Length: 82
Image: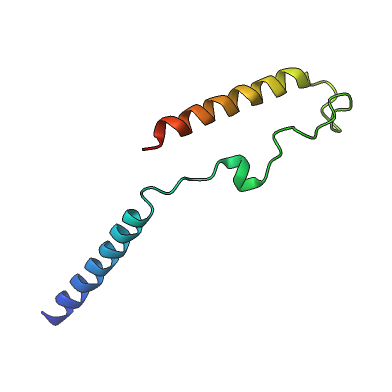
């Protein structure tokens, strides 16, 4: 009987800790993947000289795709704020 109460206490303490952490983090904004990995979003990339191995890649298409992705990410971030 005592072991069941100890196990129940441990499980309840764990669930309480999980619930407390969820309550504390509920309004915290998550950093974007670019912020997590400190990406520069192509701001200081010299468009006239592509990176090694990227010579055949159309960098204008890549940059436009990245801008579109950033716009969608910003819109989603604004929609999910409460």
